View (cartoon, rainbow, N blue to C red):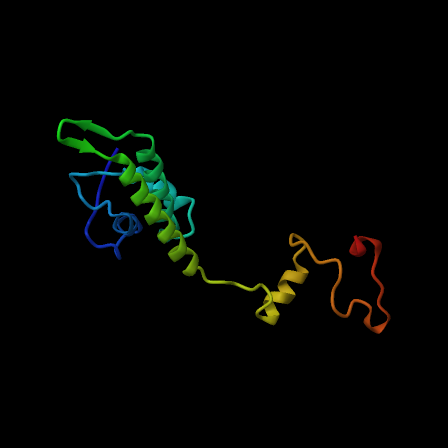
Length: 141
């Protein structure tokens, strides 16, 4: 397994995800490159990949119990809570960054969608009874 960070989030998606989740310290590795790259492959952008990474880290630390030995204590619960909070914030930011696309925004897109047999067509369309046209049984279903 490998870990890398160039310090320039604009250069690589991997670095951007590491930057967003705070995994930039080589001496305190949270996730391997392969894990982040895998989540980048199934996510629509770095913000969603970072959201998924933060959730994975919250789950990782939620499994661990708090430990105390004398005056020394390690609280994994706080770490899990911090990653849950970060995941929620990243989810909001990722959702806000989505560009909405309307398939009928442009006439050419609308016409292309109507002509594409792989797209389910609505059973009722404006003007379907205009000018004496009739709907076949297949179109009515």
